[in-house]
Amino acid sequence: MTRTILLAATAAVALAATPSLAAEYGPGVSDTEIKLGNTMPYSGPASAFGTIGKAIGACFDEINADGGINGRKITWISLDDGYSPPKTVEQTRKLVESEKVLGIVGSLGTPTSSAVHRYLNQKKVPQLFVASGASKWDNPEDYPWTMGWQPSYLTEAEIFGRYILENLPDAKIAILYQNDDYGKDYVKGLRNVLGDRADTMIVAEETYDVTDPTIDSQIVNLKNSDANVFYNVTTPKFGAQAIRKVADLNWDVVHLLNSASNSVATVLTPAGLDRAKGVISAVYMKDPTDPAWQDSPDYKEWAAFMKAHYADGDMTDAFNGFGYAVCKTVAQVIRQMGDTLTRENMMKQAANLQDLEVPMVLPGIRIDTAPGDHAPIQQAQLQRFDGKEWVRFGAVLSTGGE
Image 1 (cartoon, helix red, strand yellow):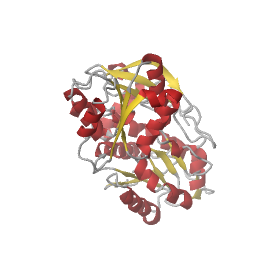
Image 2 (tube, helix red, strand yellow):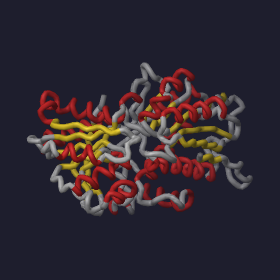
Image 3 (tube, one colour):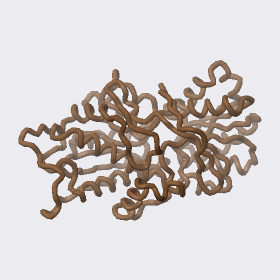
Image 4 (cartoon, one colour):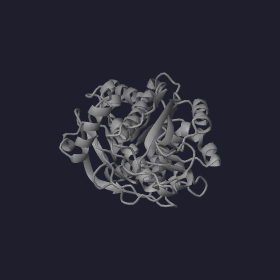
């Protein structure tokens, strides 16, 4: 369990604002505190993502050290769910019913967040900026208390599909995907773009479960299909395994890798950078290993934050940039809330983010939301790994997803 409880600032630290006498508070809020929580896989098969929760917490540490937001400090409670939906239910109930947090922000995972989707909406607890691209998070009519953050898997899949149709017209596609909503969204999005050609272009499909020890047999089966395009929809552990196995089999294939598994630090390096050469992925965040960003103001801001507040974090891990960007988005929502710190206003302000720039997101990509639009980011760009670093190519593509 990761739990951050910040002490009150000394008198020498100026408060950002003084709470109004007419302030309105929801659960977890006082004149000095705003309590937020989430669940993260600090253990288990998706533990590579756990650093996101640590980066979010460290970012709140930084905000608190600067005086907090509107005169209040953020108390951040992040609990380990091991990427196990039953554990997510248990931990989320603890956050809502025992810790009485104002909202759940940045929790990771499609199967895990799905397990508490209905519960949080029934309780009218904000489920904000889910760290998952499942299209279900953008359904304000049925689930008004939920919102994603990153581009949806359907959006990303559409970009891959457009690339295939424009550059690989004779593609024979083999697909590996996680056997849940996360994986199925990627397949659905690809099929949507391929349209009538999907059944002839897709020559093989294999699935895996998060409890599987390896996916080696699935890769062998896919190679035997004689496919020349490999659509790799995995989480980091299995992404690294897939890259390694494709290289070991000398499978000469155009390798399309989903963004959840394109971290140089947690996927490509364990797989072997030489084995990952030529892999294509989608990106909407700045890769901290890319020299192109080293002199940009927001990279310098992020690097200074890492050194000061998350010194144990990996400076080459893009997930730490992701966590920082999510935290900054949450901070903007709280800032807009003023002294009306209720769950209702939290959702209202989250659905009123306009042309927002946050650190470590690619230039040209903005966060925009509305009451009927719970999909903050709907843009991405393709990139190819050259054996040392990712190299972006083509334009930033904007799609509406689904």
